[in-house]
Length: 235
Picture 1 (tube, rainbow, N blue to C red):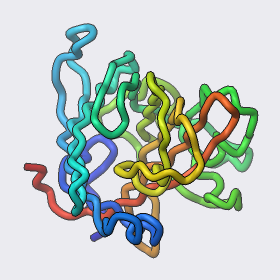
Picture 2 (picture 1 turned 90 degrees about the horizontal axis):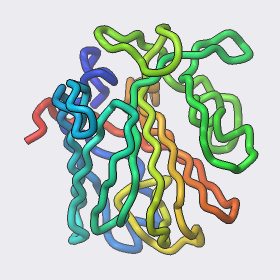
Picture 3 (picture 1 turned 180 degrees about the vertical axis):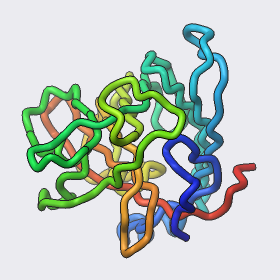
């Protein structure tokens, strides 16, 4: 189901299903679906005590891998997180506004912190190109209703998440499905940058997470996670 018009980056509460789990993952462990439940709300920051936007996220698959729970505090403070799949990480999250690209189109105001010198990384996170690095009109430009971005202008609103690993490990297929750890030759996801927003895919408005993962050896991967809306309930 397409995302309803009142579901936005300011209100992601509901149940979502990850689309397009690739053949390698399905064949390897029999996974055919990943369900994500999100509850977006305002509450006190564990860091400052100020009232901030927060997202509680739970993920589950249809195989016996165990689920994950995550919490996003949208104040750009550093928060430790640990689970049995990704280990120990440091996470930063915030709303970001717009900047203008070379064609004059508003795009997410995101600047990567990876040391890898590849201009396609920022272009991909801004949805100016696709996974094949071809030109692409990606993210919808949707203005904020009640939220001030921590960075950028007010023509659009997106979400930025940066994750830094504290204990690098083998990770694969994360560019297709965040729930999987299968050895596909990419070692040590030390850094992961994500931009969340909405795109029109096959004529329907979909919730999308674009991400770039990199390691200290100069390797990096770009990928896009596309979700279909299931239900407004998240319990």
